[in-house]
Image (cartoon, rainbow, N blue to C red; front, side, top):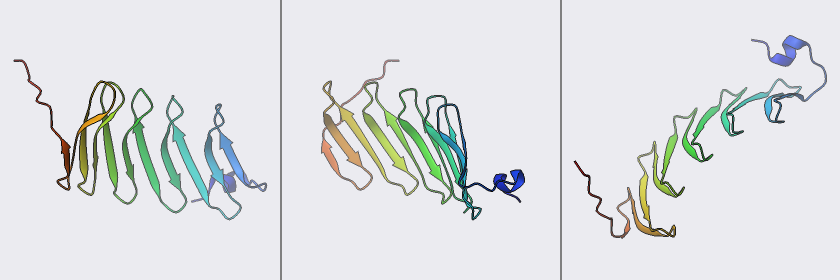
Amino acid sequence: MKTIAEQLKVTDFPFVIKDKQGNILYLENSNGCWIKKEYDSAGNQIYYEDSNECWRKSEYNSEGREIFYENCTGYWHKYEYDSEGNEKYFEDSDGYYCEREFDSDGNVTYYKNSDGFIIGKQSIKTIEQ
């Protein structure tokens, strides 16, 4: 399959396509190597692909924090945040995870990970039925 530059018969390199915000959407070198990127409406890069068949995807929450990532190797990770923007949970495709709780000042009051490491005491939250 021909690259974009080959299809357009471009001879001036690097060949670059940008969006209105100046983000690079496509870049190709004279040797045919290329990268492609996509962005969400907030300007976060949500997709990357290159001519070596490598890719990665990301998702972001409304505050611009990454909540999910995956790539062409099968690796992925995800984050969860509390209402103050503190990272309360992380998990990845290797089976690692960590949980955190915070006080009202943003200090970690409890930490636990998949290796069995625990600091602090987990708060007990009641669920009203």
